[in-house]
Length: 200
Image 1 (cartoon, rainbow, N blue to C red):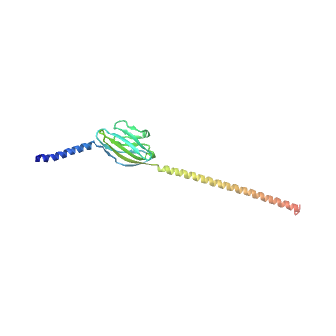
Image 2: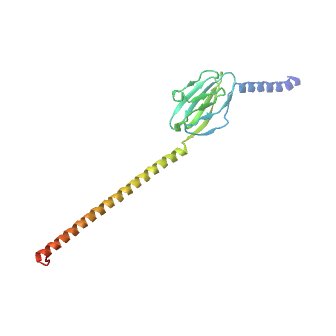
Image 3: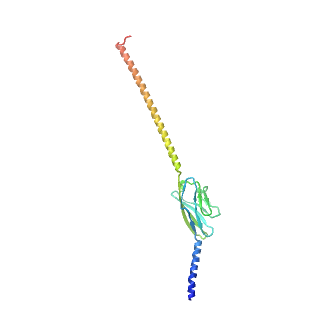
């Protein structure tokens, strides 16, 4: 092999390796997630935002993993009708960039949402977003306020009953005391009459 052939062989090989590497990269799938943790509140909506890079038209699938469930949510190809599971039928929106939006959130919607993008070569990649759904604080406070109001009402009613019972007992005692006094007076006069100490 001549010196010229040796000098040109190395750059050509490097160029071929670069082209192969570039083509392999071009056939791969890249998923970009701006926010890996999303906080939301019950009855609000949450946008699980992603972007992908791949060759051709991909298949996009979302699943959820939580303490309540492991479930496929939706599968679709861009510009085609998505196949949405029954539990998310009326509260899920899909977007061409692979993002989904969950409407009317529930507490059991909390969990890891996994997106899988598969290109037309069969190459796929996964990425995950954690969604935390909190209950409204004012609902808890409202519940506590209602309980406290009920307890105050019950205690007030109990105090009124105790006061009423005490008054009834006092009235009964007074009646008995008056009856005893009357009996005492009658007996006194009776004895006085019997002994003849009273003269008319």
